Length: 126
Image (cartoon, rainbow, N blue to C red; front, side):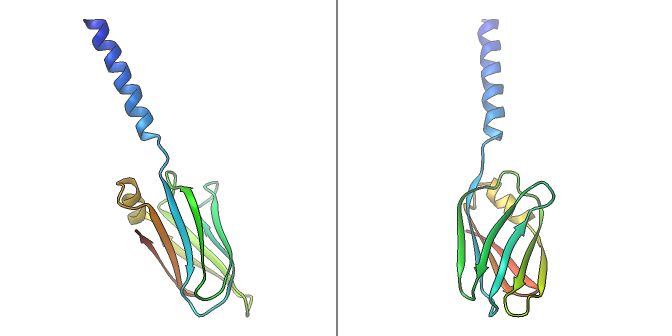
């Protein structure tokens, strides 16, 4: 009986540890809600954490990436882009803390990063 309980305990521990390591995939969309054509649109997730790029986004245009692994997303990121006409570079710091909590809780499977202007962007969870 002790051996059975011991085996059951090991199975439960291994099962729980593998559940925590599951990937949290989301659909991620960049949307240019500004009046400015933008180039090199990139979300930088920090040193060694990777980045996502949308390339060129004209006003009103979106770019979507499917099945983005969000399990290692940092709480802070930076949105960078270049204005197509002036060639001026911009960087907007973003907090992902609230979005990360929603993804981890299963409330969110689609994230939209809306660029509103040169110094303003919002991250929405759906």
